Amino acid sequence: MNQQEAPAWQDLENNTFIAFGDFDASPTKAWLVSHRNDAKWKKFYDYAFTKRPREELYILADDPDQVKNVADDAKYEKIRKKLNRQLMARLRKAKDPRVTGDGSTFDKPPYTNVFKRPAR
Image (tube, rainbow, N blue to C red):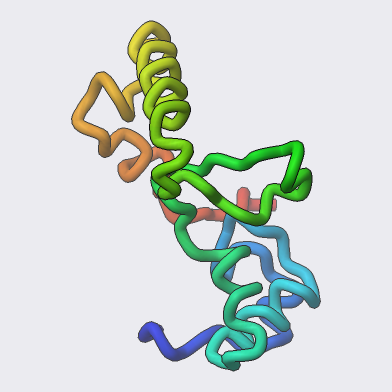
């Protein structure tokens, strides 16, 4: 399947593991994937399925729904750096392999194995 192809609507609606296995099968998933190239709906597809930014920072008092990411705003640079230092310290203390290893732990089996349904 190339980047422009997608499984059939019915497959996306009913088979969780055919694509985007982190998301359960549903009419919403099927609809979003089917409309991923439509400019009107692309932002919703991106929000659901594309990678998140490296850093996210929200001003909850002004943005309780966490829609406006201010991590790149120079006004919040000091707090972003402080929070980043705190996070990295916790991850190192917990020996998180994404920080203490080569960063590829969750890109290898068993985390990326092809899902196989158990025999009945």
